[in-house]
Length: 241
Image (cartoon, rainbow, N blue to C red; front, side, top):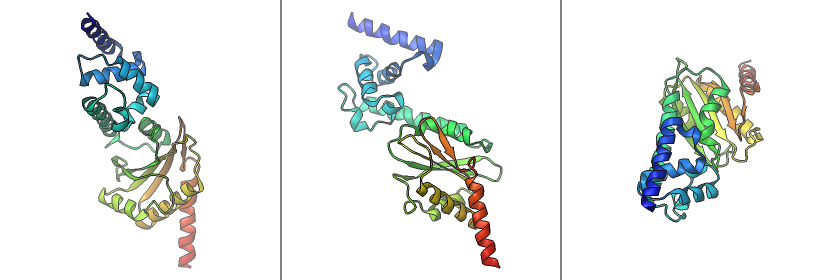
């Protein structure tokens, strides 16, 4: 009887998804559905609820290290494979949504695209969006991870990547795990250094966006990219006189 009851429960979850999509689900129910893909005949509700209790959100579960997930009794290698596979499929889908599309020079557009993949990261991750001469996003890469400082960001590596992708312009994005997107002095110094390097190589820096908790800071919107470009021109003109 218990097996029939569980099968009925799983069937009802699938039917609800077919009718209403994920909007009709609680986070633990989404995790439960994911886990049942790994063990279709098992009751995965207890593991799903414990996973949400431990990692707080659906995103937290998807981003959790495998060794931490397997500390939950009943979650094994097959479940880990399914979770990580779905996570990577979702990332690839989101990436394909923006690649080869025109960039509208909107910081909000970039924030909306990257927020859900970056908001729960425990470390700072520094991403680069490469823009071609037709104003299309041709690639997005993670170049650095960890606390950002001027000695950890290498403009030479960034310029090399830009040349490899034949980029005409760049957008930098990184997250602040603490949630406050206001730039630090290091953030400002790094951005100025990158704008200067871009000017030397004739590659435009369009923006540097810092993602926090449901908000962001845009160097372009704040006028700082324009300011750094003006500083570079002033230095260049001073040297040519």
